[in-house]
Length: 329
Image 1 (cartoon, rainbow, N blue to C red):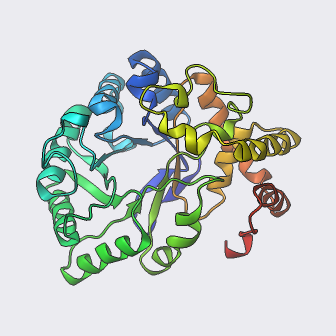
Image 2: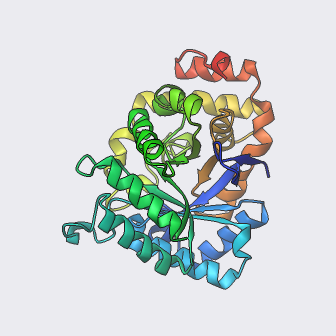
Image 3: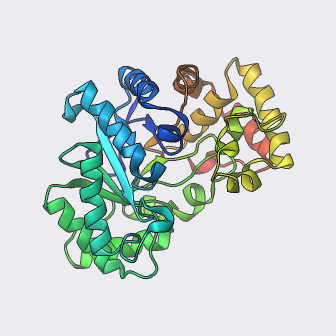
């Protein structure tokens, strides 16, 4: 396993990490989660990602049960949660969502209980909240750090301007600013990592924990001939993914990428994940496997990474019909 510094912090994250967005509770149960987390840990993965909204809190409960059974040394792995959406869905009342001091504090306490841990290594503001002053968010996160409930705080899907504003507030008040961001990043979703965050990387440094490197499964090729039963798009409540994932023009590009992957002797999934790791501003890329076979295949991204030469990267950009970005790296 390769380990990377999380931005300008001293924390080291495995280049590949393990998440539970849709998989835990909705697609797999405790026994499978136990097996997959064990395989990930044995492969050197040290970061496990979660959030209050995942499966309405059940994902955190499941991960907490697995971690308790595993009884791994707590200092050997990094654990996260995220707050914004709440976990009660349509039953959320005022103050049970968003980034107010009240919700962030209570959501943190609830995450600690569900995950059965004394502290979170990483705690994310899952989305920006236009209704809450950024000063309130920064002060709250700083307080949680002082209380020992979290070690680092960060953002998810914030704009570069919003992240820089949080750093300005932190600097002016001698507080701790956000250390990491969790954006979507894959061959079809690139703007934030390759454009919006460039000044943030340059001026304050920023760790990144990438989600959806496979574009919700599109970059595995499994949607090339339709939508298979049991896939993420077929799950109740995830119909919204169909419009963004199952697009004919994207499918055609995926097929061409698959041909290139075959030429390299690798799976398309491994190549797509390795492509995210090629970006030096990526601290870790989160995997979301639902089976042992998927996880083994995804872990092979580390073997595929050396194959992504300048020539291969240029071929990928040609397929995606985008300008090569290698000179920026």
